[in-house]
Image (cartoon, rainbow, N blue to C red; front, side, top):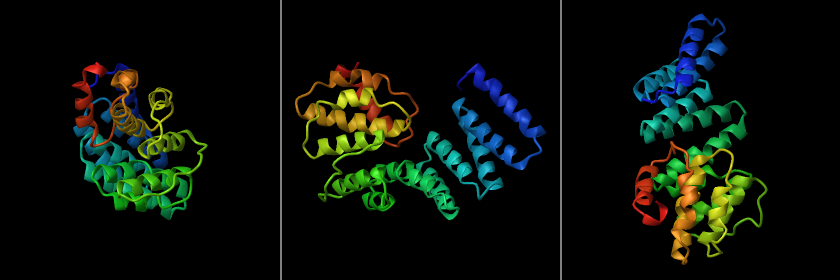
Length: 243
């Protein structure tokens, strides 16, 4: 277990607040935080129990399902996580929060479907508007063995970097990829990891040195909630150029 004193103290405080809080909506958010803290502290068994109770007690709260899905990922329960993320997306959509629904569909749901090789599902998940959906449509088509055009430009950083990766797959230069991985910034560590894994392989296949990716790999913060991560990290660990 992780023995982070600060998080341990916060967990105790949250537990006490749950017992004293009379507002159901505040207590609901505290329960979510409690489950997340348990997972961060490494008590996955307790975190899973807390997440199960969260979903059971607040079945119409999409954030609760998404939080439980994150914990299921940490436990390696990938199919369960996918089902929970899908339910969270459905609840967001039913409530008219299409942006939140889209973020789940083009984020964890897409990656989990891709990890198990269901590329038709990937294509379905990005069948919406927006730059990221457009780039992921091109990615899905490539994975399905079909050719399609990439957008000419993207304004948001995630879409722009994933477009760089898809352009590299299509044969464009790879020389800028290591720097882009280093300058990633922001959230979406799972997409950053995909960028590193695929970008590094493409870079090396065209004569580049794996050592140019050493810093990006070393600076990767764990956990990476993707079923492919463990095997890929082990492969990188065995590469002398990345040590």
